[in-house]
Image (cartoon, rainbow, N blue to C red; front, side, top):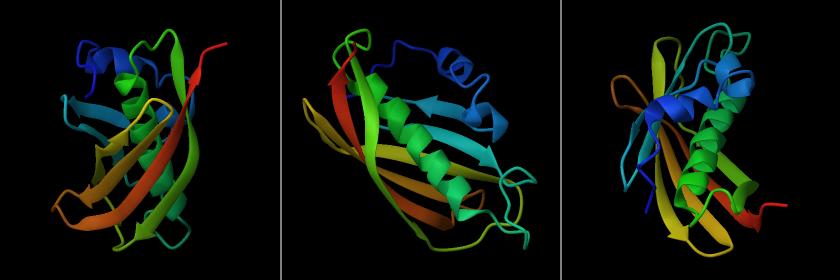
Length: 140
């Protein structure tokens, strides 16, 4: 499913100078079946009451799903993915450490991909369940 010829270092390099770097998101594992990334629960990702901000969880989910879409297209020089819908169920709070997102495809079509992203804390407790729909477009 996913193109594994691109290294994690290359993918993490794409994160420089944008929101992904700002929030400290780091890709940790890429296989043909799933993609993982982690994000710190710190001053950048917490809401005023000291808990992981739900919006930060959504950014993590969309980041992993967007990279998944890019790694699933037949030729990333000819196609790009753009998110068209995301939902997230925030199931448990996190106060520190890291959260880890795991993305698996539910459907990889020619023009539409759907991904399931589960975010766990370091104790493997489910923090957020998200689903991302990505439209696949020809690069201009």
